[in-house]
Image (cartoon, rainbow, N blue to C red; front, top):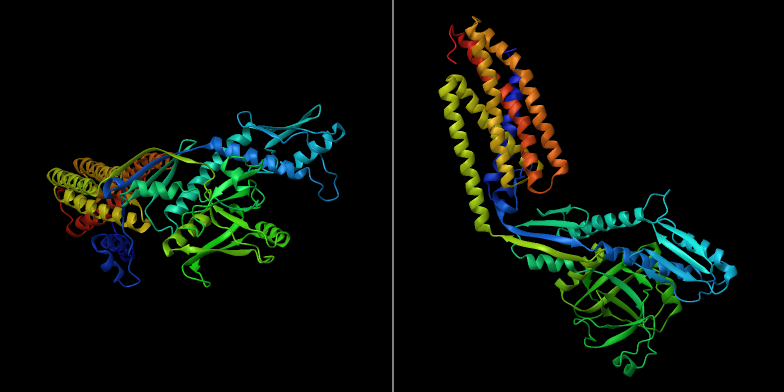
Length: 540
């Protein structure tokens, strides 16, 4: 058991060498890392918010607004379903459908009582599907006299809220980290909160501005029949709204009356990008619709040639061109005196999509870089001090074997840093605590082995047999203790968030490396000593 073949020895030393190679980039500058040959690793350990400094935001998700928007959208679909489409007769409603957001109810009355069942069937078809499973209906439809009642189920309400939270996280992630290469942590907290940690970002207000832009793009028909004097007096016809032009628009300071219901919505936009305006100075935003949006856009432009068509972003008109001809291609452009940065920003907002729910800032704070440096310094000092204390204790207690344990402990720390660099993990203060803890755990395994060797030597066993039996019989205890610790680390990783997960990662990695360094590396050195020297007495 103490004898290792050449390939086994090479494998053990090769693992340690790999740990060294993956650790080295952490001590190089970015320029020096880029100059390394392509076959060498270049990944480094990312520093968390508490070590590097940065911004922290706790956002609340207004899921009630999501339910309101869902019900309003369903109301519009129900109204469409009552039209004479596909050879069906028109169903005339006694009044527009009413929405009760608190109860999740949409109700409407049918003028002709004989059409109530048909109206209920059309409402049922209009509310089919949604975000729930195919076998579950999000709405129930019932009738009461000439009234049709559409009710949102409690299960659908919960799922719509959960979906809004996950969709909000994804939209926020695309806005803050569109390339996916920033060290930003975006995690849910509870059922209606989002935690954002952005290391290196010192301005939480800029972060808030980027996150809270709704990015809601919509295309509306312009109502040019409304008298400007009526607009000034607030006399706007039902189903209309007054929307101002964007300050960056050529018609800044003016407004138009638009139909409230959009003809095409931003969720139908498939792509958006900034480009140079070929017809004049400045930049433009190019966009393309999905199949559903392309069909609607083509139908509308075909039927309204010569009319203005308003493009609205975040309740501001950014362009209102006149439709010259039908646009069947499903793509278009937004022209204006956009700067490159503004065009890119608007394209990013459109591309990332609208936030499904308004976000409110519940908490924000900034960790300065100087405080982060102090934390790094304190963490480094704690690790060095911990190692020195452990190394001295092991040498005093176990002599030569203590030195082997100290060398294995150095290799253990190198392997941990190499593994964290390989995975691109983020190191936090709790993560440093996890490293220090694994140092103690690695020594604990060596203590079990050495004490077992002592007992065997006192029992009259020779040096080779004592060391061999010591490693054999201590192995089960080492495996048991580290398996339970590894299980606890997994639980913390999957159920925890933020710093807790950082601690869990370093702890889990440390468990694996400590078993390797304490059992295999120490056994390689201790076995090599007793097999080559065969001392009559073990000084341990």
